[in-house]
Image (cartoon, rainbow over all chains, first blue to last red; front, side):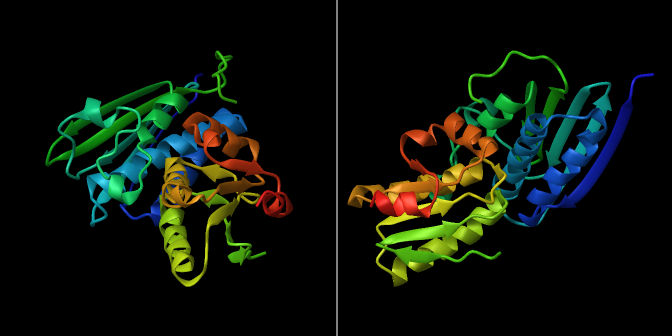
Length: 149
Length: 111
């Protein structure tokens, strides 16, 4: 029978929880026996999404972030949800090197890293209501090697 | 072992912990800015020998320091980077503007 799992965690949108988020996804992915590189990919992607919620979604004010996880065989899905300010133009936000907060010395590479490390990234956002980042990754696949090793 | 910030030959040596994320970069930025005020600092060398994880916040930190220092001839060094960290640096193109060194001795030798 195919292994399936589900989890949901809601936490305060504070920078201390960026590390916690990485541990959560690593622990959730563990039964799939991911390689160190795949674990790094998952941890980086979730770190980017959670950081975005904290800095941009809530602009470092109070709020909660929910991480939902699904394991379906070897396919992992993580959804990072916040009820922050949302985005008018998601496509612009996802443009490489774009940042709405250059004064904070943000690299503008968060979404690029998410898209590089996950197989699929979908972003839903409603201004004034919040943002949902849905990321999928297949673990243990003999995949085409990405150019940067 | 807790490594410390030091200034040698106008180069500020910054120890980076096991993970460099947004939370850590906020802390480190304040430390660095403090040293820029109290010491003569022209270059910065980040010690990544204990570091296993870096995300785009870490890239932003380094890029920000580069922007601040390079107009006055300052250099940014990174020391002891591990494969997982090297991968992130290559992806971000940071390797084109910073100097990758093995250790402190190599950094001092190129100043």
